[in-house]
Image (tube, rainbow, N blue to C red):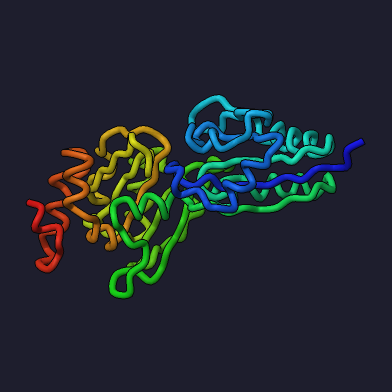
Amino acid sequence: MKTSGKVFLVGAGPGDPELLTLKAAKVLRSAEVVLHDELVSAEILRLIPHTADLVNVVKRSGRPSTRQSDINQLLVQYALLGFRVVRLKGGDPFIFGRGGEEMEALRQAGIEVEIVPGITAALGAAAVVQVPLTHRELSSTLILVTGSSKQSNHITNWPDRLPSNATVVVYMPGDLGLLQQRLLASGVAPEAPCAIISEATSESEKVHITKVSDLAVSPSMAAPKLLVIGEVVRLADPIRLRQHFGDLAFSQNFADVSSSNTSNPLESAE
């Protein structure tokens, strides 16, 4: 009879299989059961042994998905049967990934759990467009928030004033009009540059760069996406944006935003 198994909460990173950590790949190759989100790429899923049971819990914003309580119960049940279980999540399990809730459920059931961190979407998306999330001259504060929460009024809990030297990254930004109002109410300048990055690090990746005052009229872009706001967005690589993402990526709005900075390298793209 098998003794209780073990559960690994594993971050799959933002999408590009080459951004998966060595430890995550090692754990996947020895898995007996894998519960994965829909956003985990097919390339990463191919690392899982054919002998393993693969369970898609369809965790994706805006789509029907398995209830979190049911996922917790499945993890406990598989582990009690003695299996080596992997809970595979996009990004990092502890950055808006509900890893904390799953860890608590496993602890309460007396199940051994190990966390394998992944590259969170903010890091992957920023690297794609060469936006440093912190910079000694532009940003000494990094704020990660979510546009989706268990509490419907979560956005009202933002700070009344955001630091002028902050970079703000919004995961699952949702209603851009509402976000625009909240940013302006928190003291963010209307001319502050921002970037919407859709399906970061994948072949379907799209980028739109604009400014806060025009955020509400930004084009619709596929999920998963995130929003980066702050002066560091001025450092985005214009050549890469123009070559790889076309007109959607390099908007006239951002040309206007950057025109006041005569030393900004974005000027050479116009």
